[in-house]
Length: 132
Image (cartoon, rainbow, N blue to C red; front, top):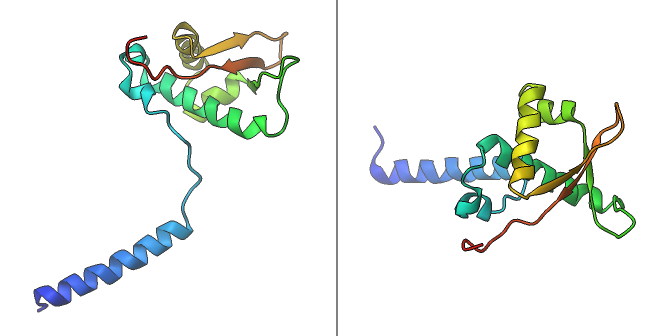
């Protein structure tokens, strides 16, 4: 049987090992705008729409370093509806509804492309001010 000091020492060692392992094997991370959850303006958005916005924002940050800008230097992303559905593990119709929610909330602007080409999305900033 272990006394309290031995147990605490064992737990510290275990925590240290787990932290070191989890830090080394840490998955890539996505930044989440806190206002997306705190601002009442976005309360009507479904969790799926919020997740899609976060994925689009992440894609924007990754691709803007590669020069995905229009003529007026505004960054944009291409995102196929099929890929949105795959990334969110949902049906295509659900993906379309999520995109529409983001458009209605003023978080994105969708520029429809020709048939069989992906839409272009302009991602807008989150409103931090809860009174807007």
